[in-house]
Structure formats: C-alpha cells, structure tokens
Image 1 (spheres, rainbow, N blue to C red):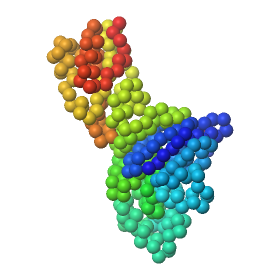
Image 2: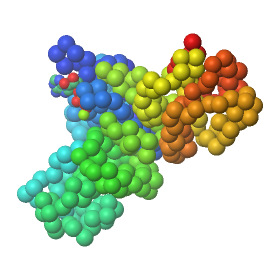
Image 3: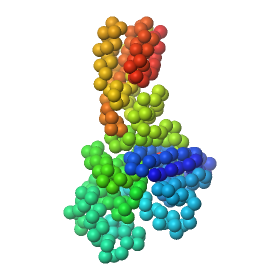
Image 4: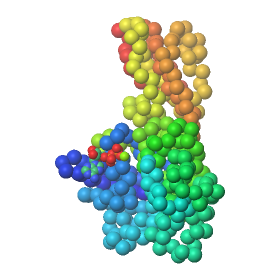
Length: 326
Ligand SMILES: Nc1ncnc2c1ncn2[C@@H]1O[C@H](COP(=O)(O)OP(=O)(O)O)[C@@H](O)[C@H]1O
Ligand SMILES: [Mg+2]
C-alpha cells in the first residue's frame, strides 16, 4: 500500500505538488493522470523520496519513508521499482548487464546476479536477448529491459512514469499487457503515471486526476464515471462541443452508464415511452476499469426534457444537461 498524507513540494514560488493525500491499495494498478506540468513526475519522485516533500508523510508498505534516515531509506527504496519514459538504459552494457547492474547496486552477490537477471528477462519476454546490446533492441524491447531492471530487486511497488509515452500504440498495448500480467503474477502495486487517457482506460481500475499539483478527482473508475460533472470522465469520453445544428428549442443531454446499465436500450425506450424523435449527437462505449461504460449525447426536441430526464434517472443512469431547451 502507498499512502500519501498532505504531501506538498514547492520549487521556487510554485507548488509542483500541493497538499496531496492518496491511498493506493496493495495490488492495485492505479493511474495518476494529468497534463504536462501537472506535477505527476514530482509526485512519483515523492513516493520513493528521491524528492523530499516540504510537508506531509509518505508511507509505503507500512514503512513511513519520510521518517527514515538515509541508510534505512536506501533499504526501503528497494521495495520500489521505477520505470521511465526514456528507458534510461546504459548503452555500454548488454541487456542482461543492465539488469545485473541494478542487482549489483542493490548488493546482490555476483553469483546470484546472472541467474536473477535472466529470470527477470524471461519474465518480461526477452530472455533470448540477454547478450544483445541495448541499441539492437526496439523501443518496446528496451522498455521491457527497463521493466526487468525495475523488477530485479523484487519490489512490492512499481512506479511507472510515462513508460509508454515514447512508444507506438501497438507497442504500448503490449507493454500494458505486460503490466497486467506482472501485477497479477507478482501481486505488485503499480502506480501508473501518464498523460494518456487510453492507458488509464485499458489497465487501471482506479485513478487520480492531477491539476496544478492538486488531486481534483480520485477513486475507482467505476465510481468516477457515474459522478456528475467529473472532468476525468469527460476526458475518458471526449464527445467534443455541441454541434451548431442543434435546434434552439431542443435540449442536449449526456447519459453516462457503467456496468449493469450498459446494455439498456435507452433510446428505443425513450422513443416508445415518450413518442420522441431523439437524435444521437455522439456516443462512445469503452471497456474501462474492467467494466463496460459509455456516454451518449442526445438532442431532445422541445418541451419533453424534464420527463425524459426523470425517466432516465429513474433507470439509474447519470444524466447531465448540457443545454436547456429555449
Ligand atoms: N527539479 C525541479 N526544479 C524546479 N522546478 C521543477 C522541478 N521539477 C519539476 N518542476 C516544476 O514542477 C511542475 C511539475 O512538473 P512535473 O512534476 O515534471 O510535471 P508532469 O510530470 O506532470 O509533467 C512544473 O511546473 C515543473 O516545471
Ligand atoms: Mg512528467
């Protein structure tokens, strides 16, 4: 488990991380999302205390890191592996040599390093490339080496800072598959830092949205999706602006559904019950946080909005009014 309590870090006059409190349960794949400059990387460095918070406490697997002296902190940090966007591999060393180096720095005996490094490379699917130079590897393969290195000391927590941001979509998907697998097989807690919503959608069950160093939303995606006004949900379902063609006396509503509500024949029912000619302005259905979720934007012709909304809400659907009928 990772627990941050009232953690702040300021550079100069500007807070990079501003009073963040978060609890990330053991075994979770937890997304930290936000735009560039939101404070995500600083937050990652605060979790392993590469960066010391100005205020607040950081606890990882029961050990309060902010209370430890440097020597104990070094030991505690072994429990936290880190994966970087730019892989940060040593070109002068072989693939296996990069993983062995992490073990060497961790004080693992020479006799054990080779075998452990090979085990980690096998785990991430590049066991056959151990003797290769890192330059001979594709970006995706290099990131696998980065992941093998992060796992070498058998951490309980993996911090991943934009690990897929330099990769193409297909390679990204394969790395995310790997995360899913190591999370399941090793029971690792994964803190997945990204500016890409696709990444959150595909692997996270929970996430926090960071803006200007502050957590503005956090929790299980399933719950966030069904929370009115969620900014994270708007980013998960980018339906864009209301088209100019919408009639002045029409209302525009967004219906958001998750899990059990996902397969309700909403529009057919509206047409039948209210005799309405609703238009679909946009719709997205996705697999999010392991459940089916979606958002549909409808144009409701004049006068019927209140009855329609009451009906939809009665079915347990989240309804948000974007435009009232004039
Ligand atoms: N070592 C540093 N010194 C000064 N400012 C920093 C440092 N690290 C980050 N910042 C500032 O903190 C803010 C958050 O940065 P960062 O955590 O890298 O955001 P993100 O990873 O979300 O893009 C930015 O305004 C950045 O310029
Ligand atoms: Mg960053």
